[in-house]
Length: 316
Ligand code: PEP
Ligand code: MG
Image (cartoon, rainbow, N blue to C red):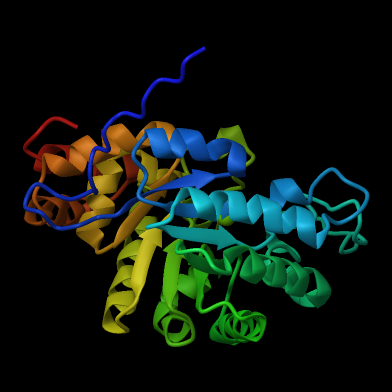
């Protein structure tokens, strides 16, 4: 079978008045790269690496990790590739590490960076494999930690990256404490990336696994919008980029609002990229800002969404 030639790239993401908003893809491994390229992703904004580690009795070898990272880096010679270090915990237990003990509340337990700091050999091995994977390639490797709470954690992660030879370190903002003190975090690392799935869960104290709480587990909650605005403003003050890589970025209307709140890049599943690109292209930055202000002024998630829609002149 002949391969279809790749479609012409749709060009970089931007608002109607040309304010650039890099549009990146969320992936779980090299198998997702093709869809990201076909959708015109400018890079990878979230490479979830847990799939390399879960459901196995032994940790992945350095060679196996390196190959999985390199395959993605090679696909974006001119782009950013943001790799997230292992985000495991009692909810996603690893076969080769002792469970963190009896955790009645895994979402509030030793997950993400907390777990990696208790098992530094796992973090060092991953960072080492990443540094070697990027060696000699032109892609820009950026590495970020999940579930960061305070500046001390951000500083420790940045130091581990530097020790491994990784130049660009960042942290995810998915804990309300991190959003409230985003300026402290931005002083320690090069970029912030807001994980709206967990940020909504923790802000609204609504377990993201519970369908019955979906109305509270909603990034349109004005409290979540406030925390996004606070984080983006603190990042801007520090001269740092602030992306969103949670599901919120995949909603075209909310994507416009996030840009209006000051977010500098958006990362989403490849299938969402065309609609988000089109929605941004139909609205100016000023229109996005006015929709964002209207959404924040609302008193419920539903009203925030309705207010944003009413403030955007073109259909989304
Ligand atoms: C998030 O929490 O928004 C996020 C992007 O990470 P994950 O969904 O993998 O927890
Ligand atoms: Mg998360």
